[in-house]
Length: 145
Length: 411
Ligand SMILES: Cc1ncc(COP(=O)(O)O)c(C=O)c1O
Image 1 (cartoon, rainbow over the protein chains, first blue to last red):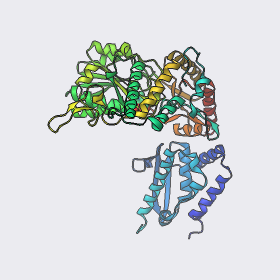
Image 2: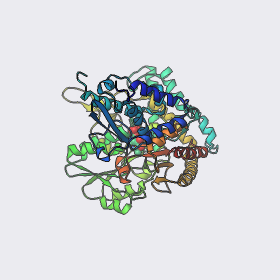
Image 3: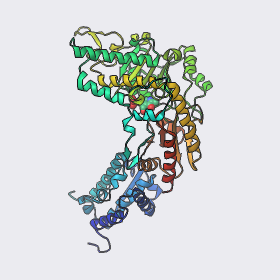
Image 4: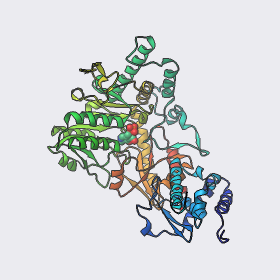
């Protein structure tokens, strides 16, 4: 494993630890989430096309994935700050990982940090759509997946 | 429990009748401002449906046995109450449906089948709910007719001169929203019906958002069709009403076929039941209509005088408070409207605002509220809507304003 890139599990643990500090306080969780979104690397507006659009989200979401040197590079954006925060977390955990690792991972941080409390059922559907899209992109580069 | 009409309007007494209002959401007292989507039910409605299932359960118009007779009587009593609620001329003209959506589909398909021809126009407005657009598009496509929309002003109203210019020879029917579910605009429906009738054009009215707020007098309005949803008038979900003038309903073919709507069935020829049963196939939502009966009686006991006065107070206060919020844009007219507010707050996505209000126990609607063309008209893809009703309080207006201020601080 590339020593400079922590594993998906390590990244998840990091995110979980940060959110545990909020201790279920929705105001702190909201601030954390919005901060995550603000830290997200901007997505090239030219990449915001119908092809990168994630359907099934209540807000507009775009996700672009590319394989570079055997690792998935992800860019995403949304017109909703909260959604953008969620995407930012997903990207933080999954960026630069190997497609096979992404496909094989069952993400646990969403459940663990209680993000679902912050999400309406519509948003949960959107989140599932995003995860599905990342997985679909990763599968394209994973033989036998 | 029914209120005595002699008693002055007392919002706290009314609130005591609605159990769902007394709960906490996310550890905060519920502030329910999504009445435009569906309204909560008073205890008498809940009790009535419960009693039906516990003791009265039986099918209607079928059995000779006692329970069936009782169920039939109660169901037909609901129809009488609905007639009274609308001041409709007769019970034959009251069709019980599952909601406004079904009523619109029924009229579009049945009226359309009987009366629409190639080249005809069905006129709607830019502020219609999808339920009053899509059924017309479906039948128009089959009949070679077209659906045209009357544009609205920047203020969210219909200019009557513009409306008049759309009442041309080829228009067969106008189908209009009475009160806008996004803007709260109260259309001058009486005048609009008269103007259409002068040209020999029929009018259908979508009263889904007017029935909970305004007294309806079908005979004074002279509407040819009028519909509303039971669940928005404090009754059970899955109940709706369609009024249609008898001479029109008689000329229209059934929409659904099945039990109850027939007189005789054979493989050579089937004859249909009389009005209103011709349009009511199959076992209806019996418990629901008994509940709707209780709901309409409740509303009539509270009385529209008290309801309108209280809602105007809510409207005036909420309008002033919301307008004072920096960066908040309200859509729709600023006077003479129902207490329904759609708005945007600068730099906050409507879904984010809805989510952060929900965290504070405040229920609002976010999205396009089934009015995409209307949102597009204002350059929006969605908005936040707070819709009040007579059990809401001035304190709840304060809670909303405080909730919005709090949400803003995150951005
Ligand atoms: C103006 C208007 N028309 C039609 C409908 C559809 O009503 P229902 O969903 O009860 O059939 C609604 C409900 O949202 C409405 O507000």
